[in-house]
Amino acid sequence: MVRRQSAKKQRKIPFLFWLGLGGIGALSAAAGAFLAVSLTSAPLQQRTLSAVDAAFFNQNGKEAFSRSLLQVPEVSKPVNILLLGIKTNLSDVKSSDGKDRKKTGYDAEVDSLDGLSDTIMLLRFDPQTKRTIVLGIPRDTKIERGEHGVEKINAVDHESGPAAAAKEVSKVLGGVAIDRYIRVNNMGVAKLVDELGGVTVTVPKDIKYQDDSQHFYINLKAGKQHLDGLKLLGLLRYRHDANGDIGRMQRQQMVFKALLEQSLNPMTMARLPQLFGVLQSHIDTNLTVEEFLALGGFSMQNGKSKMQMLMMPGDYNGDGKHGTSYWLPDESGIQNMMARYFDRGTVTLEESKAENLRINIQDTSHFPDATARLIKRLNKAGYQKVHLDPAPKIKEDLTTSQFIAQKGNPVVAEGLSQLLGFGEVKIENSGNLYSDVTIKLGRDWLQKEQSYKSLNQKSK
Image (tube, rainbow, N blue to C red; front, side):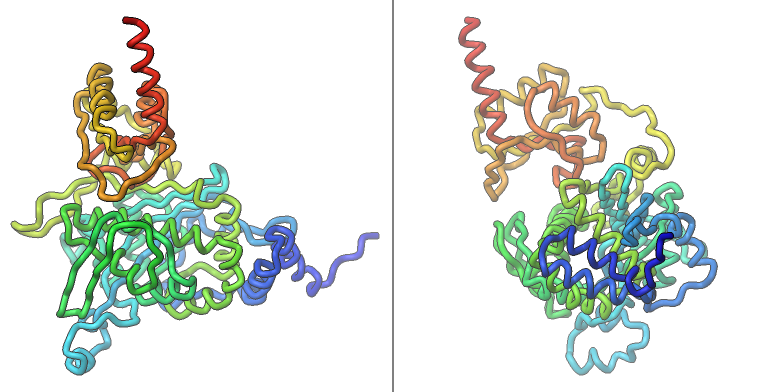
């Protein structure tokens, strides 16, 4: 006869699992602290959802999380989570009477979730492919919403709450299910970064900006550096260059990736209770603590190597100098992206002929003669829309060239890599914003180019 374990003993199993998984005391202590809280399964919500709104988030959410044989929370089916990063000034706070603003003399940023959504991302954790998809939705995306009329998607949460924002994001993305939401304000992000001890990122260029009305100042030099919370906010918020909000989205995704990498560092795990305390004070989410644990376990197993960064296809309707500037969704491009990465629908036939594809080259190797010969090779192969980007200010010493599928189409990037015989394919939003594929040249191209040159000389 098999004796059943007591409830007390059953509750110790997850702790032992994490101890074995991490192999270090820091991880086991952190997991134990989390699990002590997780037994309550209490939501971390600051905003009450109606029954209808709660049901919207539970179309798939109830089935997405389960427990393993060792009673450890895990992601059992693909789960989609809407992440809203919110910037709130005194003038945004619904309950404010303006006295604080008069007291400070400027429109200070405050610790509140009443502001506009500066960051909008749809995260997909997929245990079948073991991938994490991060899809950026431009905050200037044009929508039409009932009595509100035409507006930008970043205003929806501010006006009507997270469920309304999730419904509009789902609508723009062709009806994709959204299982949970997370709202976090800028001050929470800054405090989280400081609790982590800062984050190491590569600032792509010199960034300098001042806004005396908000007492907001940025002064960052290009290059790899370790930033505290306040400086990192400057990098996240800056959008006063040629790429505007879309360039900011690229930097936000870069920072998100860096934050995840540092958060999964075993040394960081020892501070998880403190980090969790920061989160509790600055977020609103309908994820339970156990579901957070499941997402953390998924990320620990798969790491950043399985992360793919995308941007919702579309384009601006203008430069914003004559009327409101909106990001206009590309319905065909969105349909294909949803089919490839969110298991919704099928990929339609696409114009992928060589002469129609825009290829941008970024010469990180800084060998202009070799780059010119590559452009000639591509032109000879039928690729006529090949553009050389200005030399990057920061010299990257890439061992392996990168073929970046900027619009999320891996087929064309893989085709180019195979045609040229070098490099690796990346699915991320880090290339030229207007390219189909951005090629970042590394040392492997120089080696390949030298071999071509030797063969040509021998044939002569």
